[in-house]
Length: 500
Image (cartoon, rainbow, N blue to C red; front, side, top):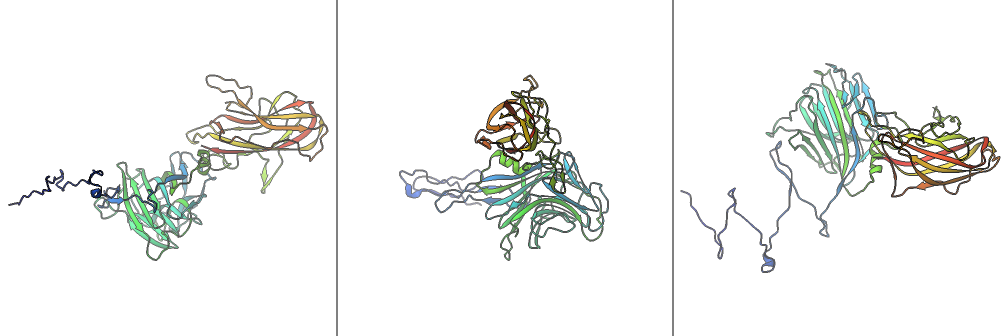
């Protein structure tokens, strides 16, 4: 027979919670009983233990001056594979025997679905960008990926972070932290100077390997800290910790390289693969946690989308206007008379523009013209953020006629190249901003002389100009004075801009 007993203080009985635990409440009367105020530890449940069977708790950190440590994530890269050709500005690719393809929705390895690729076969990509692995900060990758079949012998699909010298090949990375799918299932690998530490991802019952559904996209999260590595998965019901690797005692860091590339690679080791399998990468995000570094949206956009280059899914290479590049050298562009309605001097976001100076006085002429790429299913819509612009000019062919003053202005936001574009329900006229560039071209000014101007840079500071997808940005001039009858002035234009 159970023995029941009451616990009583001076005047009150103790209570029991609904779950059967003794109910405990810290003293809250700080006025009458300050010495009795209780303290409680603060924890957060990062993982409920659905896979490992162990609830994972972590407590906030307080510094020596009793401030709670806080930080924010800094986005280093974000990419969606929604186009059909390699973004050579962001990614390098390599392949041997098997191939890879870009489709709207996936970067796919073993795109031919070869049933038994030979030993040494591989196909993969890696970022040109390198990401910091420093101090107590946490480098992480959110990866949306799927596998077309269950694990097969001699085949590895790996993704995550690899040391900066890594290029996809038939060999495993020699440094980094990454997920690995092999014949035994999914694993987390931490490798330092070629020494691997491997932990298999468990099932919900805490044993075996994690199971997945063929062709189902999962969000995998890889964390690389100074002294720990983790692999999480979100299968639609919530994030589950699959594997945790503390730093081995013989190492100084979980990975030795301080610069890391994100990569996705499929490779075949000794012997032919046991069956057809494909890796499908839909998107990834790289971020740095534990940092209080701030970033403007346009700076973040340049970091993600690339600086001073074409956009994913569109034309690769520089966006600036230059002549034909042969053997690394720039051929001169062709001079032309600017017009009000066309990009007669050529299109480009900055670069070199050769103006024949016979534009009629008191007439607007387009020198630089650039259309922000319109959004499509394969080209994400991005706004151009113009923060400033440089202009320098010199005489390339002696001026006949003149003198004249060249005034300068920006036209932007219009939906067609012509400065005569009108405002309407589905069209926009150009917005105009007068620039502080006022150039004095003298009569019969000699070749190889600089065109005088009091200012060469216009800084828009905290009032940048935003140009939407499909709209134009143009640097324009107007001549005041006496028309030139011949001669060429070269304009070198450098916009300071970002993407968002």
